[in-house]
Amino acid sequence: MDWIESKIEAIAQDRRHGAAQLAGRAVEVLATLCRRGRTSTPQDLVRQVITAALRLARIRPSMAPIHNWSLLFARRFSDLTRKVSSLEELRRQGVELGEEIRAEQQSLLWQLVESARPLLAACRSLVTLSYSSTVEAILRQALPRETTLTIAESRPLLEGRRLFTMLLESHPSLRMVTDAQLGLAVPDADLVLVGADSILSDLGVVNKTGTYLAALVARAHHRGFYVAADTFKIQATVASSTGVLESRSGKEVWPRYAGSCDNLYFDITPGHLVSGFVTELGILDGPRMGEQIVTWREVIASLGHIR
Image (cartoon, rainbow, N blue to C red):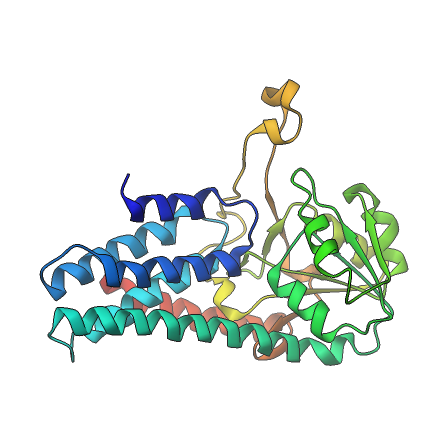
């Protein structure tokens, strides 16, 4: 396995980082390929980048940002050949393209933080689960310091504990609960805020297992349930009925009886349970998020020439 294969495989096997972070890694891999790819012509380099982008787009079916950003990088890089004929210049611009896209991704994150500020300004108690770099940034920057923040640990790898430790200094009123206690924690909160790995064509939300249960409890007790996700997390051609949910070895749940353990990493929360989507465009309700799905369906159709 050469270096590009090892980088792609590392993203495929990563269980520590969320969709947004892994999308950034995918862009970095493609930019590095622009610089290091073994080829003698611009056309061969473009083919290598497109091939790698297609691989990246398929390795994590529950994570739309890896798919979307990889294909967008490939399209933009391919478009460079219209004005660049030198291989060395194409390499240089490919590296610059990677830097530009990473800056776009970072900008989206801070736009989400600003979108969330009005929602969280008067919040006195909030529940979340698992780990999301997007949720971490929002809570760190926009949640009042005195707000009681309850985090579900998210079995089996306990990603919620990571979020807990990341926020210890900025939020002293932290509480950690088991996933099974969400039914007790959510009714006492003002709202629930979670991340997302994908937003499907019917507004279904793919996120760490336990999200659907939190949404059901929030609906039963008339609490707001909000999803923090930029529009690059839209998976416009996949519906809840056809979405692929990643699963891993039962050894993570109970090594002694691994063969008897189910270990689905993600579940799908129906869109009608979502109070609003915190995006770079502001907080969108279902119909407005639906408009963004239509836009992304057109974007994905326009990428057909690189497939």
